Image (tube, rainbow, N blue to C red; front, side, top):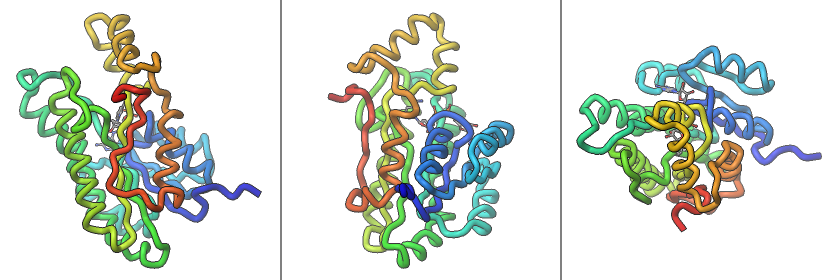
Amino acid sequence: MHEGRLKDKTVLITAAAQGIGRASALACAAEGARVIATDINAPLLEQLAAERAGIEVVTLDVRDGDAVQALAQRTPALDVLFNCAGMVANGSLLDCSEADWDLSFDLNVKSMFRMTRAFLPGMLAHAGAQGSVSVINMASMASSIKGFVNRCAYGATKAAVIGLTKSLAADYVKQGLRANALCPGTVDTPSLRGRIASAADPVQAEKDFIARQPMGRLATVDDITPMVVYLASDESRFVTGQALLVDGGVTI
Ligand code: NAD
């Protein structure tokens, strides 16, 4: 009988109501994990819970330190923490306001600091018994890996995510914690559709997003979730401190 590659694992995912986070919740549940799917969007979380038994949903704003702490207090030790929450602030340095910069860093980077600080002690204690626990941080190909136009704050935050991930990997490797950054290319999600719709010429904007990938198409969320399942599972037990690209050849 196929018992699932994540059998007996508890996986918590942020920003799991739509896009890559949601697809990851479904993929991890399909591999037998107990999934705790969190997001600020309660109605969309309820739809997710209704779609698949075994996914527990919790409304959580990752910018709210008290709420993050409270959730960590009442949640059993995690095997996997997937910090997926993040946003794109469009624009070059001269376009970027201090407010956009601060919001980008708070949501894309400090949320991971908050979440990991809250859940790490329990995960480390659990790692002693289990042998390995995994933190997956959502970065991007737009980061220290490659520069893109109009991604000043975004690229800076995602580069910071890679640095944060490597520091975690270095500090806790002896205690059974693995930490890796996931770096997708251009993925067809509700937020990407929003960026296309808000462009001056949406038809051209979609063509431009597609043209970035030598493979000639956008990624689907299902192109990304196999990497999430791999990093969550013990199949990646010898992989830590890495920035793993799934980008359709952009960085060839
Ligand atoms: P999305 O942007 O469509 O959805 C984001 C989700 O985050 C929404 O459900 C929203 O409710 C939730 N959210 C927003 N603020 C929140 C908060 N304060 N607390 C908790 N949840 C909050 O999803 P996506 O496009 O799949 O992006 C997910 C992650 O993947 C982001 O970190 C993004 O930077 C990264 N990423 C996306 C792409 C892409 O092309 N879509 C590429 C590379 C990386």
